[in-house]
Length: 239
Image 1 (cartoon, rainbow, N blue to C red):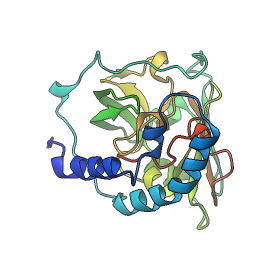
Image 2: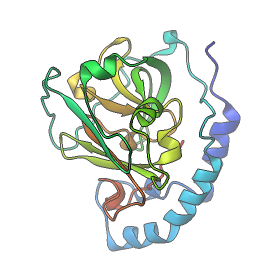
Image 3: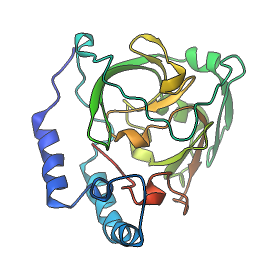
């Protein structure tokens, strides 16, 4: 059954943003950084993370939209550096780090796993949004395959274009966090991250890496936290 997104949940986050408790990255703006923005982020980010981790309900699904609500022309294409051309037949996803059973999976391997499809709102930090249908493999299912060790708390994502991201483990294990290979019921286009990208209704767009080639479970955050986070954006970036 398709549900209408809860105004209460969105209003709560909006009030926090307006109060300055969360979303330091939204306040910094632009793609550059400065000494002031780095200092501001160092002050507020620990508070941001604690508040947003408290707000996240790791196993509670976010209400989804009906297929008729999809907005095919509203998903803008933001390119980090260049658009990599990856041969789907040769593609391999590496999953390693603090896990018991490291894996290298082909696109066919991923497509053989249970397919999860969801229609959600993709929200960009730049102020635009689009309702999109994503289809792929739940990261929860991939985690079950590799069996993270007890000390694993964070997950790093590396992309073929050099982009990099890190997430907290509860967000990774959320049932609507996908490694997507479909968009709006069709194979994922290259410009949207084919053959594989992150998709989730619980994070801002810059957390949802495209062209993902490796996933690494780690016990702690490293100094290199994320492309935009290392330039002053908020790390948790929850919705």
